[in-house]
Length: 322
Image (cartoon, rainbow, N blue to C red):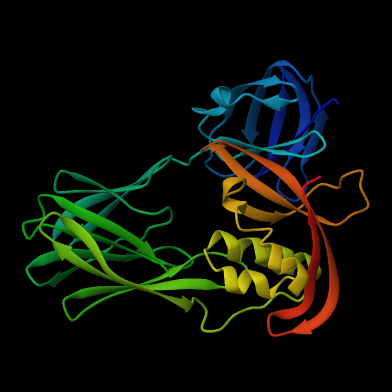
């Protein structure tokens, strides 16, 4: 089967394939082009707006899919191989910039790019993308840098009292130092809204988690209201180690077989199927990361029936990987 390259980019740009202009690509309007199932493909992206830089990368295909090694160091490009020969290539070249900051009278720099870091007092402190300048909080003789991220979320860096060494970092939806502990709400990012409430202690040799309990990251569950949503939520519950909740999305007969007990061995995420397959059966995608730049998706076919229950109006009564 001849693969199809599907190029996307957050910032619209011109795409060149093997040295020839192929067209314009964006998130809203991907560029699709057939490519050879084997051999090198040379890709070039030129942004049409903003301060982003042009990008040129080489990927090598074999059997209609990229070789992992050809993408392992391809900064600014990531690929997802979908069933049916679709290769989605997203261009996201890092926008390198520096921003001077002042932390408790101490000058520093927020360096943004492939990796975002706060440069302070000789330290390079890793911080999340979109990090805003932090403030210094003193707690129990330790120095804590607490900051927000653009959009949502917070980050914390624990330092020695003289700010000379980094003890650890923490990224979460919400962080609050209190009573000698650091309280953090971790959003697991799934569709139903699972989270963890964690307590951390700053010790001389780093951060140590002292407790963790399950919570709803948004205050209450967001149960799925579609058959596809129920299937995705069932796999997510299995991946999160919640067999009881996973069983709640399945018919009693199917749940008794535990069909998703080992799903973590074949996928890291469950996603809606983005490109249609030559099969009338509904399916979702089981996504597996090969490396930081490449992931593959395989279909999980299912059958669902409308059965009202405590976890939504749909119940899965059949599953198949074939």
